[in-house]
Amino acid sequence: MVVAEGRLADASTVVSIFVVLLLAIPSPMVVAPLGSAGAPSAILALGGFFLWAWFRVQRVDPDLTGHQPVRFAALVWLLVMVAVYAHAMSTPLPGDEISPADSGMLKVVGLVGLVVLVNDGTTSLARHLAIVRRLLVGVGVVAVLGVLQYATKELYVDRISIPGLTSGASDWVLATRSGLTRPSGTATHPIEYGVVLTMVLPVAVTFALRSPTRRWFYRLLLAPVALAIFLSISRSAILCAAVALVVLAVAWTARVRLGALAVTLAATLVVYLTVPGILGTLTKLFTGAGDDPSVTSRTGSYDIAAAFVGHSPLLGRGFGTFLPRYWILDNGYLGLLIEGGVIGVVGLLALVVTAMVAARGARRRLTGDFERELAQALAAGVAAGACSLAFFDTFAFPQSAGCFFLLMGLAGAYRRLASSERTPPGAPDDVAGAFERAQPVEVGA
Image (tube, one colour):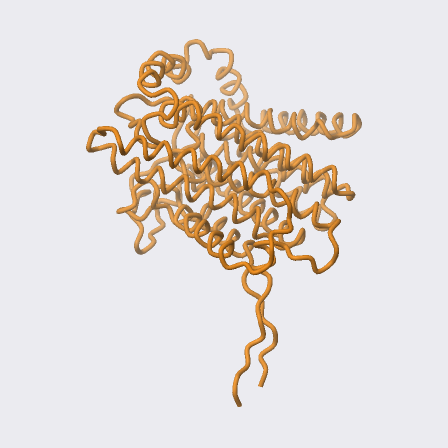
């Protein structure tokens, strides 16, 4: 008997599981021995790197996909961070910094693994769209949870218990600002929650405006995402949302921009009428920034950072070794400058720019309105993530870091898949082809 030709699970299956782990499991819950690198989503991303490497080694077809800039930039940054780690291990480190340095290196490998797995292992535009759709729906569900948390002033996720994971949410409580509850969904902090929402906001807007199917559903999903960004009462989230929408609007016609402005004003009015005090609180975040302790803490970080950077400006002191007991920076770029040096920051910026250019390249190659708008949305999401690093330590939180690097991988995959639309049918598709193919199995009668 001959079993019908099978099909190995492609990267979209693995990445979809990653999205579920990232968003459904509360961020404080980790595998305790692994510390900050022990989030289930981070462990799967780390496994994704080795899965990608195994398929690269095992492939039998030559690499005919051409130059993959996002993959190249991600791997270069990984090599840079390996050099940073080696430099840190070669210097005398305080005992309490060795384990964070190890965890930091594992985290970097996992994040890069996520990028290259998505970039090379997504087998078709349809599978790519499936990942994006699942990410959007997952974030939409988390947004609904946040709205529910605000309305009931109950956290809910602190009641979750998962065998094998530390009950890190047991003493977790909802934050407040100016007497208003700040929801956090399944994220560690309202800032992380708001930043994740803003990264996916451009995708939500694009699906609501252009999706060829179930547009009504995505419009219903957009409402809690937008509302939850307001409810997070986060200066970082508001600024990142503004950046995301500006990048997204660059590709719109004047008519669409006017319509979006009208909808935004209407939504703001609805929030003003239904959530008393929130707009005033948000306004004070900016008008009273000079007296805000969180702002003065950030600006006061520069002198401290300069002192640490001066000891090793090129390679830094080791990713993850700048402990909170030294200072809480709330600035991902500044933290990476201390821990990864100048070359670490430059490598990351090169990856971010490459991902945005890749998304724009996909837009030029695609012809459908929805597909082109989605490419721009991915660029906008990456821009929002890059913006968040300036106001928030994105790497310290699994959801924000995972979402940011997932979007960069999706941008790279979109460029590759858009380019492959012009290649002859049946041409080898690198790692994606290896994922897609499986041989028939003979079973004796």
